[in-house]
Length: 345
Image (cartoon, rainbow, N blue to C red; front, side, top):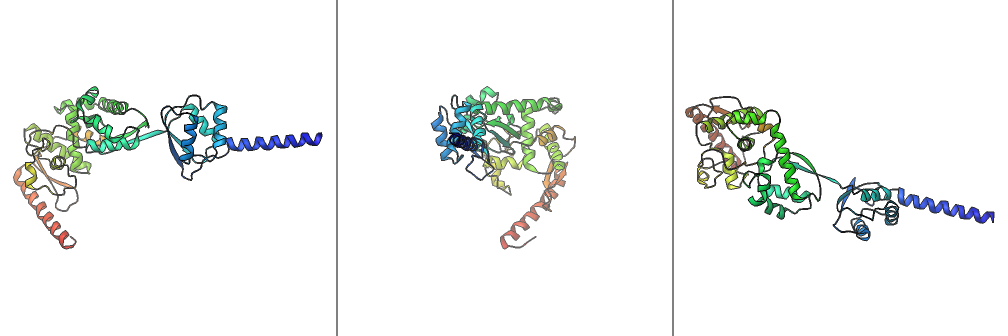
């Protein structure tokens, strides 16, 4: 009798150890640092288990089902995208499902040039597909709730890293972007600075988008901003080459030929006076501040230096500008000729 009790005790201990291992031991079936899985709306336990099996998330279905029953994970399942980290136990996965602890997804916005780019970025990261995003942000009726339209949409977007859940509705994503933009303008005396320049925040943003496309060097950005502000003040056409690239939707252009200048687009600042209808990209916050803090100068012209350093010559009269422009054109002609023959500068 005593031997039988010992055997039963050993069996129970062994069984308890197995159950503990199934529930508390590593239960992931992948080698990466983490893997995502998506629980659809209305999913039940069997659906979740099938997804975890098919997506090769866990190698301990029995342990996960048991842990789920103990924790009550299957009573109310929250739909969305979840992240399982390598080595997590069935208990940890079941607790994550019970708590509805969705994965936080990053929306990293740097420089975006077109609505198509924005739609692809959002569609890649979240449940709303890019086609639906594109249709929404291409509709003035849809955007009216954010006090913007298709031309000025980007003025509601400040490049930054934003955190959302995978199934966050598109309207909430755009609203958060718009709220962050409003907060941005409320800080550091930006609204007052824009008013002092005689421009609205949307106009400052649009001008900053042109400056952003002109150069990567902050020291030149200040001067370029001053050129465009001076030209706006004198009712001169901006004649900004980046707006030609935008008008033609060809951002690979390295040279703007005269034939391009007749493009009828309202974004062509060689033909249309003043600022274009809206921004041509999402400028960095620093570039917006550079425009707001642009120094007072008498510059009206600028052209790239002939050494291709990326820096520019700035001039207050056309004669000087023309001389620098001819130097640059000559150097560019030589560069293109050498490129065709395979020679190096």
